[in-house]
Length: 68
Image (cartoon, rainbow, N blue to C red; front, side, top):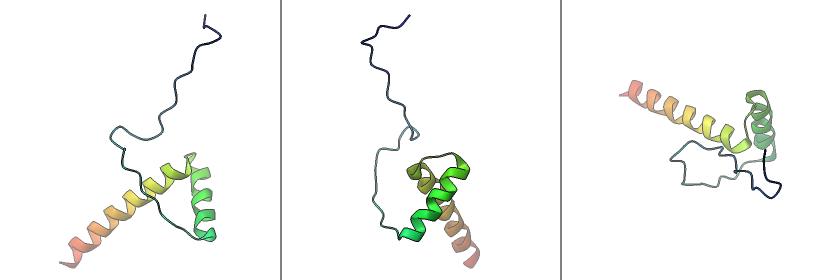
């Protein structure tokens, strides 16, 4: 039984250690693409942007390593 005045805990969306926010400007078309991917992945916009950024960094590192 819960107390009617109980405060529900706030859900945590970011993994532990994600405490350094950044701001990025995107075009309307880019935002629509991000929203489309977020819906497919069932993620928030910020979680989707983070996922894509991490994938992009991994791809960049791989491309850089291959170029050396």
